[in-house]
Structures are given as C-alpha cells and as structure tokens.
Length: 396
Ligand SMILES: *[C@@H]1O[C@H](CO)[C@@H](O)[C@H](O)[C@H]1NC(C)=O
Ligand SMILES: *[C@@H]1O[C@H](CO)[C@@H](O)[C@H](O)[C@H]1NC(C)=O
Ligand SMILES: *[C@@H]1O[C@H](CO)[C@@H](O)[C@H](O)[C@H]1NC(C)=O
Ligand SMILES: *[C@@H]1O[C@H](CO)[C@@H](O)[C@H](O)[C@H]1NC(C)=O
Ligand SMILES: *[C@@H]1O[C@H](CO)[C@@H](O)[C@H](O)[C@H]1NC(C)=O
Ligand SMILES: *[C@@H]1O[C@H](CO)[C@@H](O)[C@H](O)[C@H]1NC(C)=O
Image (cartoon, rainbow, N blue to C red; front, side):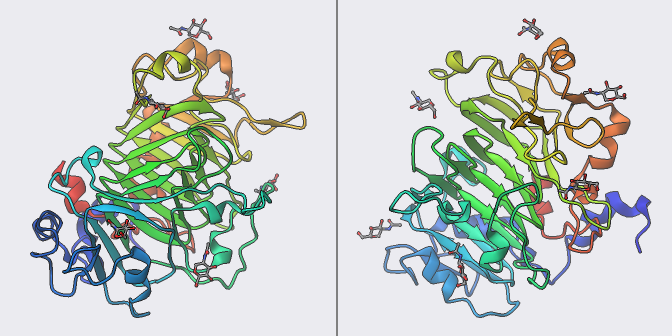
C-alpha cells in the first residue's frame, strides 16, 4: 500500500507507465491532428469522407477494433458526424479531432451529433441512455440510469469497461430541443476511466451523465446546458473549463450517492472553472436564477472550487429538491459545497439564508483537493489517475 504522503506524487510516478495510451506525446498528437491524417503514428485509424479515411463513421472504426488491450488511436477528420456511438471495448482508445487550434475547444472542427431525448418514436419513455450521442460502458446494464434513490441495479458480475479512454478536440451535441425537454445526453459514461481534453458537450437537460463507477476527467472543455446538466453516480473532475448556462432549471449538478462498504467520494468536483450565461442575450433573463445544484438523492456530493460565478447564479447557491413533500437535503449527509468561489454570483448572505450550501474552509476542501484523492477503483482504492494525460494538464 502507498502511504498517504505519497499521494500527491502519484500523477508524476504513474504517467510514464507503458501500459496506457500515454504513448501519444503532446507533439505527436498535435501533428496528427493538424495534418489531417498525413502525419499520424503508425496504425492510426482515420475516419471521414476523404480518400485517406479508413471508415466513414466513428462507430465503424470502433467496431473494427480487436477485443484486446492494444491501445488504439482514431483520428476524426473535420466534419459533422451524425451518429450515435457506443463503445464497450476495455482496451485503451484515443479519439482525436482534426484541428489547427488544439488548445481551444471553442474552435473545434469535429462534431458528433444526434437528436434524441428519453422517448422513443411513439413518445413512450425509455431510459436516458438511449438519448446519448456517445455511450462508453461495458454493457447495456452498466449504462442504464434507472430511477429511485439507488438507480438501476447493475448486476454485480458486470465487468469494468474501458480503462483508459481519451478524447481531444471533439464536440458532442445533442440537438433534440433548444430548451429542456427531457434528458438528452451528449455523453453517457459508466464503469470506465476517461479524460476529455478541449472537448465540447452541448445539450439542455442532463448533458453529461457519469454513471456508476464512471471516472471522468475534463480539461479546458466546454459544458453547456440548462437543467441538471452535470449528473450521475460516478466521479467527475472538471478542470479549467467553461460551464455555459443556456437557461436555468433544476441545478447545474444533480448527483446520486451510493452506499458502499468502503469510503467513497463519488461526486463532482469543478475546479478553476467559469460559470457564465452562454451568451449576452440570455444573461439578463437568467440573472440570479441558476442553482449550482440540487440533491438527486441525499448523498449528493459536489464542490465548486476556485471558480468564477457570473450573476446568473442563485443567491442561495444550491437549492433543495423536495419530492412529494420530502426534502432530500440532509445536513451532514448531503454535501453541496463551494470553496473559494468568486464573482458576482457568489453571495455570502444568500448562501447562509438558503441553508443548503456549505462554504468549505481550506481544511475541509483538502480531502478532495486533487484528482488522486477522489478517483477510486471498483474496490474503493484511491489514487489511480494514470489514465489522465498529465502532460497536457501540466502544459497549461
Ligand atoms: C460524409 O458524406 C456523407 C454523405 O454525403 C454525409 O452524410 C456525412 O455527413 C459526411 N461526413 C462528414 C464527417 O463530413
Ligand atoms: C452498446 O453495445 C452493446 C454491445 O453490442 C449492446 O449490448 C448495448 O445494448 C449497446 N448500448 C446501447 C445503449 O444501445
Ligand atoms: C444564446 O443562448 C441561448 C441558449 O442556448 C440560445 O437559445 C440563443 O440562440 C443564443 N443567442 C445567441 C445570440 O447566440
Ligand atoms: C445509505 O444508508 C443509509 C443508512 O442506512 C440510508 O438511510 C440511505 O437511504 C442509504 N442510501 C442509499 C442510496 O442506499
Ligand atoms: C444576496 O442575497 C441576499 C439574500 O438572499 C439578497 O437580499 C441580496 O439582494 C443578494 N445580493 C445580490 C447582489 O444579489
Ligand atoms: C448543519 O448542522 C451544523 C451542526 O448543527 C450547523 O452548524 C450548520 O449550520 C448546518 N448547516 C446547514 C447548511 O444547515
């Protein structure tokens, strides 16, 4: 066992591990992305309509991969891919979007898009997973949201899925409606470890779903929505990203905690990011209206750390979620928190009056203050973050 004091060093120690997809260095990757496929590592699969492409759709490229642990790299040529992608493979996968602005998610040129909410063609409701632009999960069961306080009961013998999934410069857009009209996932990510760098996630309701045993890290990405648009059961870390408010409804975050035999830190952690109205036309109509989150069950856990909040944020910060007269917020169990939040959206009096937002002191934030302290494996062991691209994160 590693001593606690070693934890801060873990990212440094582990990032050189040869068993991960980290074989793609920063410059190799960027050359591949900007050349449009002519300067890519040997074996890179190319997707698009050009004559150098191996497949016209992302799903065909994914389906072509052998079911083994060899890392696969797939370059998506610039364009819009209208398809639902479903990835069950356990072996490492890296998806690259063609771009000449690899450090700017607002200039991405690759979009995966689909228009669906949680209803079938007859209007019957179906599980949220079927609305997803992209699903990453080992099985259908692993990806089902379900309902009730504990969600879908994923069978115990379900395997873990992708151990090292990476995406760079790809936008995921669910275009079902231009307002909240039921869950409409841009991504559904469960029982897998994945990093998203300079990506975009656009929908209105339930944009990003991190399901059970999902570990997802977002870096310099754009996450846009209106209602409960960062939600799930797993663990998400959002670093140096833009959260775009396209309206207000429910909360920005809605997490459902799970009881485990070990200590868990399932939840969502947003650090060094910005929370702003999606544009200046919508800003006046949502002033003071957007809640930071609401408890999907009493074990909700979320923290906005060192993040800028514009005037769209509700003075109370978070809000409670009352269903059939029963309030889900439980003092001591629910953690709906901020740490060093700043900007016009941070109203200290409002937070106290609202009575559900915890403003953390440094000591209270400390147990959550970096990815290695919150991401854990199926058995509850913390510290495995070698699937995060630390070279990119440290490059600023
Ligand atoms: C490829 O061509 C097909 C048929 O014209 C089109 O529907 C599709 O959107 C194109 N894909 C990309 C990525 O441009
Ligand atoms: C994804 O693919 C797996 C394997 O083919 C399948 O069992 C599952 O139903 C698919 N998931 C969705 C949401 O369609
Ligand atoms: C501003 O954002 C809202 C919400 O996404 C959208 O409906 C509207 O079209 C946007 N307006 C402009 C001018 O971009
Ligand atoms: C977790 O356990 C507590 C205490 O037994 C119980 O009140 C709560 O409902 C459980 N939550 C879930 C999500 O199972
Ligand atoms: C801060 O919150 C308090 C209590 O809800 C409210 O009276 C006040 O107007 C808020 N201040 C701003 C600048 O929104
Ligand atoms: C939760 O309970 C503690 C201890 O009684 C109290 O100090 C704190 O103000 C309560 N927090 C909220 C948000 O009600």
